[in-house]
Length: 283
Image (cartoon, rainbow, N blue to C red; front, side):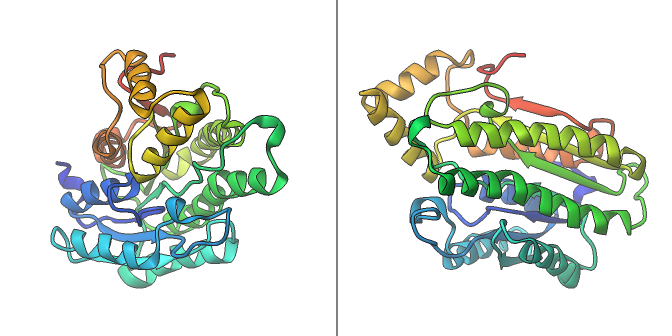
């Protein structure tokens, strides 16, 4: 528990799926007394935003309702992270509801438009980069503007940005070229913004988990196993064999790291891309 998070205001993007990373991060923050705006796209939008990759508005509200048993200060907001005005509106919603914004967790992302590199289409490439990288840029931009307008809080600072990267933020893998490119780009964005925001006492970091079997993660398991001619269990067993701690990650592993980076205990940490991978990704 981090007592200095009590009463803070956070946006968690991509939080509309039961069992997902966003929902787990929101739960952890709610347990520490954080007031929350939970975000997701809210509706499917053709092949680029299918059911297995999008949190519907109804499910987003269900996630919020469950978390209100921990903290009543939770609202939902749908927005397309590719559209700057909608992301600006997401930040404005937090301020309208709670009067301020202290924390942004950039979790929304596209992790399902996979396939052989030579079969990659411009539409798929643009969708992945637009959500995973441009959307994070929009969210950072408007969150930081709000944070800079607020007073510094003694022992904590003015704000926290935590973006969710991946093992793929630091190494490559087959069939995921656009995803890997977007997550590598997010490392560079994080480091650059951290340098610029240091004088404002706004900490900017990333958490880089390895594979997590959420609902989307289950789809990824099935896809990757099929492409490799393996059963899902064979695919997961090979993955576990690469991880020194012997298991794949859980949503709670990532949520715990996020909460730490949002707390006052991480006051002197910025520009970092923290591996939460059981040792799979060593640098």
